Image (cartoon, rainbow, N blue to C red; front, side):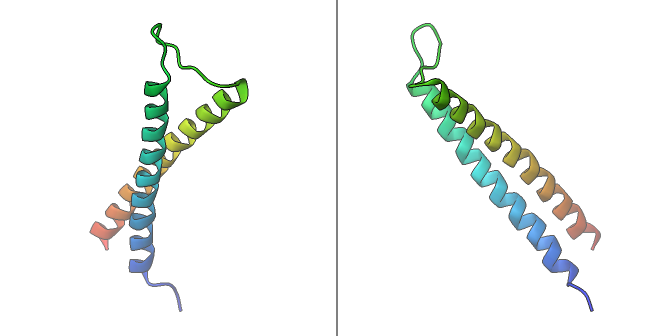
Length: 83
């Protein structure tokens, strides 16, 4: 037999929502750090070069999670409507 299509549809919708939530939280934490560590000149301070790279990587991962989560959510909704 096969897998029930509703399980796949709800899996897409659920994983899309979770990715959006986790990606949004990552971006909010990155924005908070930038706000709290901004100098008067508008530059964000970091302890080291590695800390800057880690911050940028987490920010990029948050954006990626939001985009992929949105795509999963849209495909899940489209599949749900057409089911």
